[in-house]
Image (tube, rainbow, N blue to C red; front, side, top):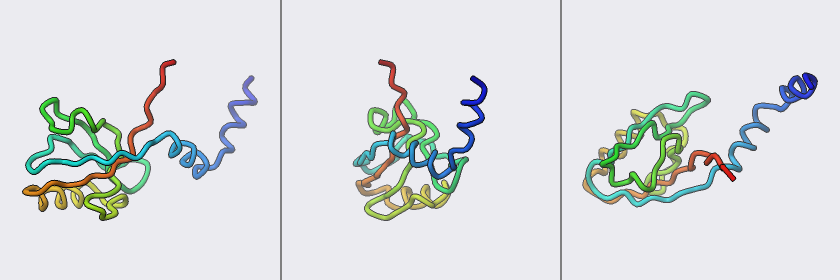
Length: 111
């Protein structure tokens, strides 16, 4: 069945991305004032920022997972911004509640 493997490589990158996108759900998280306890990482496959890690003490530990993509902060589109840019926005608003919109990392289903 080696032919099926070579056949799979013909799927375009955009089709693969579209398939991956359907597995992600949008999550809106209200972050309280202060430190969030999340580590940010630049995306490896394209522009944008993902959650690299979540401290166990994080106020968002129950709502955010590593791999989640940050796509908006307080209604501002940040989907193309890097870690430094997003960290600056989050820090600048640290005295206030912030509304983060994330694309949740695809959950691996174990049925």
